[in-house]
Image 1 (cartoon, protein in one colour):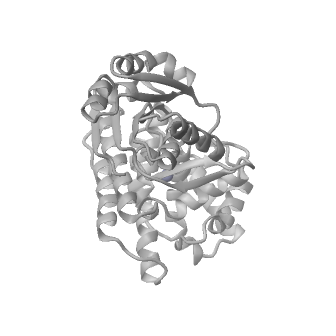
Image 2: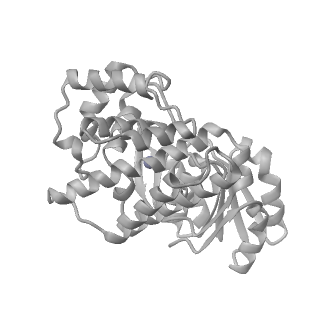
Image 3: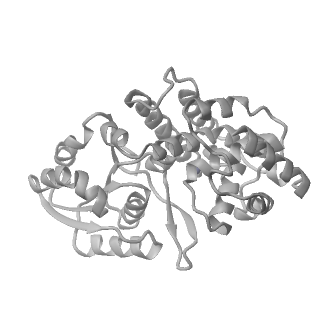
Length: 342
Ligand SMILES: [Zn+2]
């Protein structure tokens, strides 16, 4: 299933009913959210559903694989026609996977843009041991991004979204490198989409996080999703900087937003491979995106350990990290520079 309906802009949340009825998904609809988001915007959506069909409500408590499977099972058993998810990554990833397993269409209403997951064919859910796992699935068939809602949300989440898109910078370098080494295959369309996503963001005329800028960011994030769809994997938007972030998620107790971790990883790896980091650092500063390891509570030991263990995080993703020397001394020096420059 590919995304067929895509609306980005002010007030798109008011078009749920219209989208459902024009696509004939109006008999039984499962609305999934969390209590906070539901309290803010739930009635707007639920009222539109009630006007056209039967509404069932589910509040997401967990984002485990088994929980997403249990929703899929109920959707199949009770003949739900369509799943509507409204919320952040936790809610949307559960819905995305439940939709994929149950083969029911998914209408997604993201209330944050903290990462490029909103339009990606990947759901990140937790295993039984609480560790995250990336699962391939489909992009939402209907995607409504209301920029008013995003703009009213926490600004730190928007900053994380900037960080995740900026990380395409490193991911593309890693992909090129892996292809040169004969360790991966190129996909021209996907490569171009990821570059376009990065360029749209980096070349924006705006200098602060205003509503117009949020629209640019959302478009960039969606282009990153399309890049993944074309490639059939996250390769176009995820390289060594993501491996580093996965290592932090796996080994570090301190939890940070994914988008901030990958932005830090981008600058760190650019330093390691001796490439200029100015464009990335200047851009992050322009939008006041602070990814200083000290601010993120990533101490020197954790930084060194996660850098050194990053390539263990994924078997089939060859990057610069697989060939560069990662000695303690070198990583110590880079950590110090990051502390001073970011
Ligand atoms: Zn990411």
